[in-house]
Length: 68
Image (cartoon, rainbow, N blue to C red; front, top):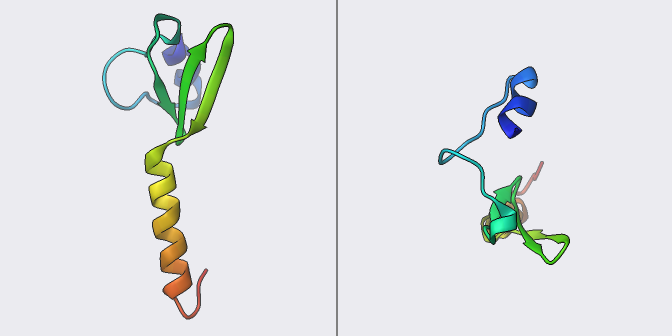
């Protein structure tokens, strides 16, 4: 199903084949967020990699005499 939604906008899934099934207890990553299902709710939080990249970019901006 996800592939059908992405095809018209010429986008592809990255990473391993298939889609993570949140209803089976799997977790997924999407746009820097970790997603999982708890009961009838979808829960999410910012992923560790996103926090790490933000930390690094803020450090670089702080050290740059003329940050973007």
